[in-house]
Image 1 (cartoon, rainbow, N blue to C red):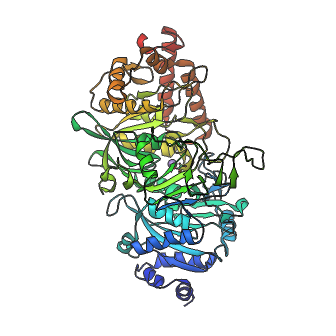
Image 2 (tube, helix red, strand yellow):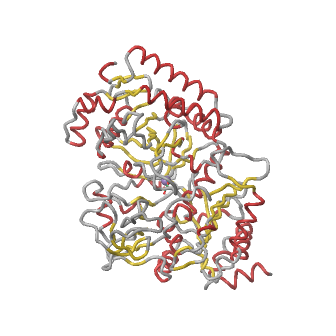
Image 3 (cartoon, rainbow, N blue to C red):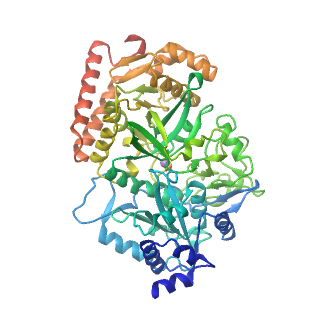
Length: 622
Ligand code: OXD
Ligand code: MN
């Protein structure tokens, strides 16, 4: 038989048998189809065994996709100069005729897109080894578990996945002859100096009907690590069908008075403080990027979809990030990407303690201080989106509940973005629906280096999830509203803003202040602290913050700072509501009516307050 022969011939050692014992005809057909199309030189199939996991890591080094650094276990990988972030433009949904997901969701006609990607993938792996890996998204043996298979010809991608996701070969054994799993096909394409050469043919195409994502001619993790943002897009669709949620959120434990423990999730766009919040000193981390949430016995429970961190390294230093700093300076399995590697194999990045060396290797090749790119821009020593990839278990603040099959009960949900002029640093919504509409669905954020394109532009980014939403936006908002409305005591919903500035453009808060906001939110979950009711939500009283600043940061918190930070900016808030209403009216189909009603109500409250007070209301004036 052609199928069996082809696979058997290409499989290294006993790899073919590893596929056969899974006893899944559908899986075998899927693998055959893409082996036939991509035509790899050979195939390695990974089980959950430590030998298989090591084989992949060794291959990444042997093939030059990673370079060993000075500290044991540390390796460095480079993506191409123009392949440093998620490619939003070339990431498209393959939609059948007649299906339209709205203007925020980039798509291509299915037939045309399939033809295009098949052409690109044809024989693309002929010089490469294909790695086939099995993972479980969410904890294993759990209602949350989603099995997923990855086909990739990059040992770096395969290695990253082994660090970031729970092994799932055993889950596939349990699955039997089922077609219900996610599938990813990735090829880095033709290489030049180990860098994807055909960037103009970079594509990420998503087939929701068959739960497959194709990714080609790219190496950057956000475009290639199937189980991360590619799976997230499939899981948002799956969650919508099955009435649960997939969100772009951290999951952490906040420690309250008398040993109280409360779990929070938080949604922030990439590079806006999600990882740093989940890493706040004194608290514990379960995850820093993606959660699944389900309602179980009247409570919202959440799990970390991943087991590792693919975090931004820029700015990490011994003072602000002591836990990560320690890990980054100790032996252990860590992949650094797009950092600066010096001749003596030290890893450096912008914002690291100490002086930056003036030469080394980085994402531009041989680098020296002052080097410019083709466009005449000075090349920084490390890319602003340079990353570290490690297992969360390395962290001293790791919370072992990460792998609990039941997940953890969520007490509070936080939404935050990069907002220089509108929201106060922390605010609680009036209730679930008010929070989903005026905080989550109204989130805006200034663009960052995590996606290609200009940075610093204010953009609508509901739930910090716009880049990954795979269902009509109106439906996604409605799902979020419904999710908490039938629950007796749903989690409280908060907004935070770490990026508020004064009229001279100066930040009004210190980086570390978020630790205080977190403790205040924890107290609010139990009604342990009073708050001031404003037209937009509940804000802290000065006295409670003063006390918390002393307790948490041992810092004197001045009332004049509090006033500047918590002054309600009515013109900015009104302008924001108008922008948001306009977006939902003109660009989103089937927006739930309640969204317009609540935003209009909020507008009226703000207008009334403006008449009563003035444009800017100080918190001490209520
Ligand atoms: C990420 C992203 O890498 O959102 O997590 O870009
Ligand atoms: Mn993310």
